[in-house]
Length: 234
Image (cartoon, rainbow, N blue to C red; front, side, top):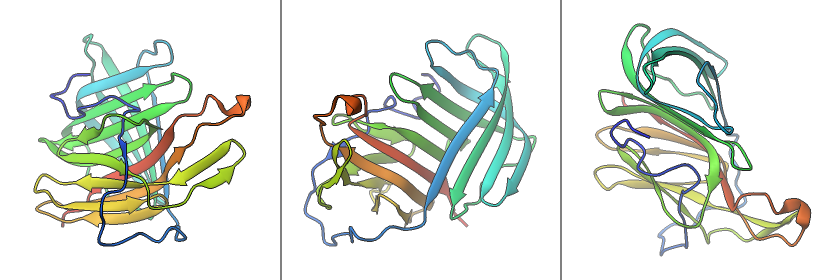
């Protein structure tokens, strides 16, 4: 991927790190009403189940209803081909997206299907992150930087819960801003990272799957993250 390193890691490499000392232990019985959904239709080429776009785009029609933003984008891909894309982002509770029809923004989209569908979409204006949505696997090594934020998963807060494939654990996503401020948002939770620019964080799902002995479950990823980060600076 190009685009000046807005994502300094590939999909499916978000770190799952053990719990460090914390002044406040999250309530593992609490689950907020959070929903995050990402979908895109486009004329991007698909190779082996994968497609991507990274570059400047012009914002077309922008519509918002019942928590869902529908945004038309057009831009030229790495091969010099003009591409049309329709992005749909749904969030509960709803967030505002500061997008203006006719303006030029930077758009990055990655979709990959090794065994399961990993998706990421991010929009920046003049290097400032407006929104990022991820629906993707998490692995035990690595981390993820979505400029200007650093994301990592934190485990060890909640007990393992048995499921049909063995067990899973609810984990948290810790987001660190450029000034070092950070916030931890748990699975089925929401929070706000304050700073010169403030970001609303919604985490519908952040879980770690423990190794299964059942053959029918061996293709599930180590973990999964479905989350949204949006600039809410007033």
